[in-house]
Image 1: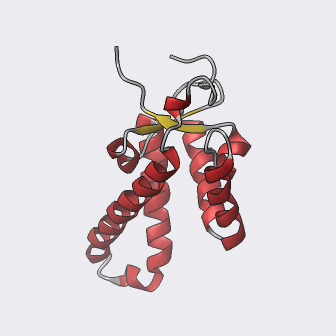
Image 2 (image 1 turned 90 degrees about the vertical axis):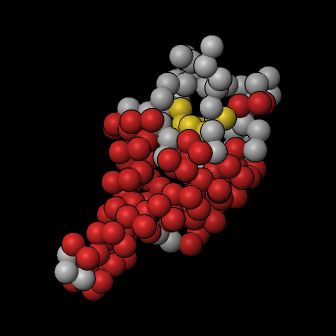
Image 3 (image 1 turned 120 degrees about the vertical axis):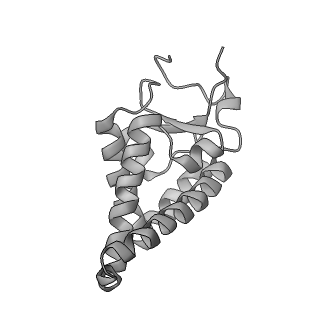
Length: 146
């Protein structure tokens, strides 16, 4: 386990291609969340169609929080072999997973913070988005198990 985050200059392999992997993981996760939402709709006798965006948002929030708390990565991120670490280099605990998901949800809710976050992922040394910078978290390539 790390006691600090990997240095982007001396341990660049941890950050190689992470922004594109995060984008691909986001697509995978969005598809999985959409499928889960479609599965839930019939169980509400199709009444949830009246508040479908809210249902999608709720499922997304739970999906992200639970998967980040359990694995420090969503299923899409695991597929892309990346994971989150907190400011000490440790995997996410449930509190950090909740705060990261809350920050993510607030960031994607409006265009400017979303664009800023994407720009930061492409330009910062550690590829951190807006929520990552606020929380001191980072997405890295999953280290090999020894």
